[in-house]
Length: 399
Image 1 (cartoon, one colour):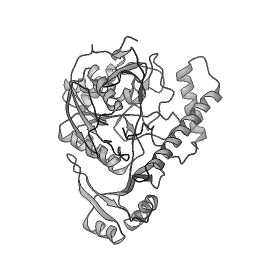
Image 2: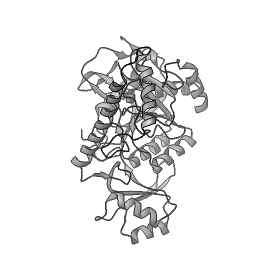
Image 3: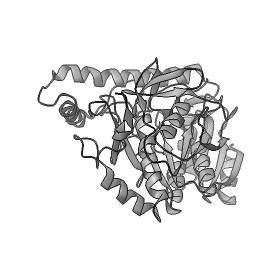
Image 4: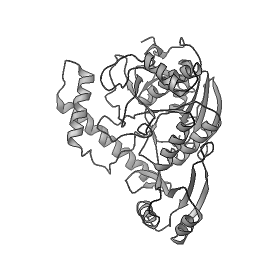
């Protein structure tokens, strides 16, 4: 598959986090969670933080280098779709100004189901994307303008494992999955592609579909935002997928992808929430010192971290501007077509389990607020950095 298994994009250009006091504070929190009364040497954890940062920078740099025809750095040094700029709320005057400065109109419309107007513009071929975004902002002051940044899966599956997610939970509810293509999910009601070559099955998305089936979800909707495009997982594709989910009446959507903040995606999330949708997202796997992950950090999004079989927060778990719940994110497995039973690790796999519980509650309630209140009552108090508690611990079996 052309989609790279890359952790969350971070505000790095190959360096390390510079927020030293904040980093050390988060390291201390991590120590408390993973070691309890036995405190490991600080140097070891600092090495883990540095390793995660180096891995993130290395993988993002490799992505941009290997796919330079489709991906380049934006003005925040984030991987983005090459040569494309997003403009929110375009009008004729703004488009005319952009075209006078050499920008071409690739697409103009409103997100399906959300009525968020946008335009996709092609930057002048001789101008780097980072410069193009800055120049257009100067030409159109006060407008929301950004690159179309990429988002990446926040989990991995590998090998064989015996532990599985239990099928003993009551079934019910509908969950939408924005990810790669889903294969093998018996409760997949509909699937649509939002990238070149999509829908195309991915191990990551198929494992999520398997988890949702095992956790009792009655209906699954899939949106493939990757397909065969190296620049898949971009903000526009995710925003369009959210709009499609809204048009289908999907009440709860799970997103196990992470990237930087993007104004179009932020607007799409807010519009979906305003129509009653609950958006659940993983915090990523770049470690507690990483920059806040999106879409988990958008206001109102249910941000989810992962815990292992002993109830400890994953050492690699990232962070968001807020945290709502934790759920199993390791020491479990899923059936992936063509791969058999695969062991799973990452916050990617915690998010759909939380979504499954909220969806089951919502199927029995009259609205989003009631479903979330019921989820709060169901959550089991966990260690620090688990938000309001751990959901779906009962999903585990055979551990």
